[in-house]
Amino acid sequence: MKIAILSRNKRLYSTNALYEAGIKRGHDMRVIDYVRCHMEITSMRPAIYLGSEKLEGYDAIIPRIGATYTHFGCAVVRQFEMMGVTSVNESVAISRSRDKLRSLQLLARKGIGLPVTGFAHDPRTTEALIDQVGGAPLVIKLLEGTQGVGVVLAETRKAAESVIEAFRGLNANILAQEYIKEAGGADIRCLVVGGKVVAAMKRQGKEGEFRSNLHRGGTASVVKITPEERSTATRAASILGLNVSGVDLLRSNHGPVVMEVNSSPGLEGIERATGKDIAKMIIEFIEKSGKGEKATRTKGKG
Ligand code: ADP
Image 1 (cartoon, rainbow, N blue to C red):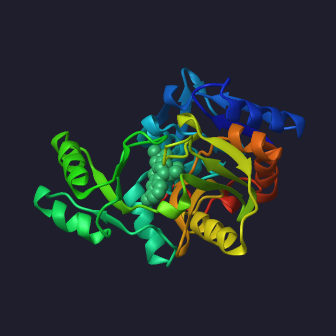
Image 2: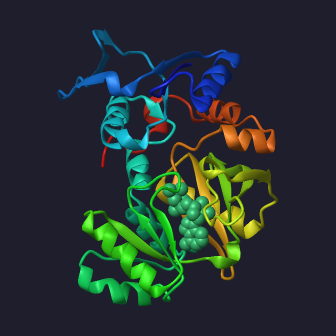
Image 3: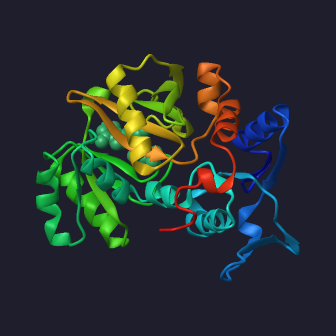
């Protein structure tokens, strides 16, 4: 098959792993910097270019869209879909998962366990917002944050009020969340490919840190997940419509709760921790789903 990986940098671990896995399985692989693409939006003949080159003949794309380029990146993915190219994750699903609030609302509607979460705009609602998530301690998150940046644990009500005020002063969108203390600074990353959890790892924040992000000094180890955790992860991925995703769970007293579903999960940490070749599984998934129209459900709609 002719497969394009939409990524800004060939040398990134995940991009390179997917490229090599595809080559090993006999595919014609190429990494395309989607930010440099331009599109021709005409009815009946949608086209996409990289410089003066028209990109044609692709059977499938693997989008690895960075958070900074969600909007443009999703437009590129949508353009490929309109041309009948299969995308491992469809553009609608990627944009859904990038909007933290929208994804939490979609998951809540289907009864997925979530930390009690509140969202508000008006500063006069701060008090009510804090009460709604059960008072202090609570977690306050910037909606635009990634890798744990802008995720704050407010130990007291006063601290929570100050943080909310400060973020609001910067015109930032925030949400407040019940603090899952019993998770003990750890979370579980489940890698879901084609409706199955193919690998899971536990990330533990460093001493004195409630955030477990590997970029913040957290460490990863293999973990055996429960059937309930497994089904929560696969259901969350399917509700958002993602074929490949990283579902982050916290172990709470009221069962597994979903914190986030990531549409371009990093492969390095989880491949190292579990010894599994996830890039190969993603390529095999593409082979199984087949080409074009059949595999693309939305064909660029929505
Ligand atoms: P990001 O998307 O920036 O990584 P997350 O929402 O995943 O932000 O939060 C970063 C880390 O903080 C998580 O991996 C988890 O360890 C911790 N964390 C986030 N929310 C909660 C919460 N409600 N209760 C306990 N720990 C949390």
